[in-house]
Length: 114
Length: 115
Image (tube, each protein chain N blue to C red):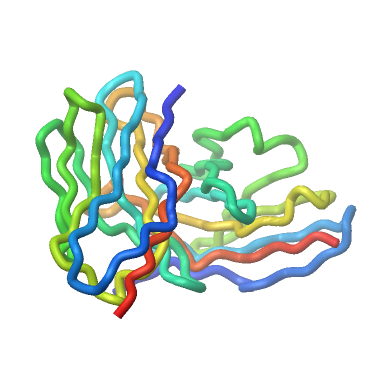
């Protein structure tokens, strides 16, 4: 069964450093998403991406964040200058194909900012 | 804005007990509703969905009915197993009305099933 994959599973970085989180969505999906879950809190939407551009973003997704689809398979989230409060689990999701409204999630990347 | 409210956890049950996890929502239109499950150490898995009023979503013995009159989408299972221990998230999207695909999640309910 096709699945969304994410790398790395755990990333530790120092405050102020740039990080790139990587995702490979399901191959026939056209919509891609990033969500985050701070420990003990709700899963929060960050951004959605379609046709090589951002289609929707939340207030959390400020100028420190960017997304890119650098090739035909990867979808990345970049945080330019990490802050302590960026520590969270980041989930990538994709949707499309025969069930366009169903989002399928990857296993997540745990980001720890020290 | 849209919101989802779930019952507080943890919910602790014995094996074969009946499960209900309550979920109510607030949305401007007629959202699509989802239940996701997160097993320990894993990501979110879509468990079931319903896209219009009175629809019943079902999967793996779990069911939930889209009740527009009570704005609810309660998750039920007749006989839980230890392997059902996980965190369950109720979520909605307004994609049908607004084109907005972002999922709005509830806070999650942890289920612990004891043998």
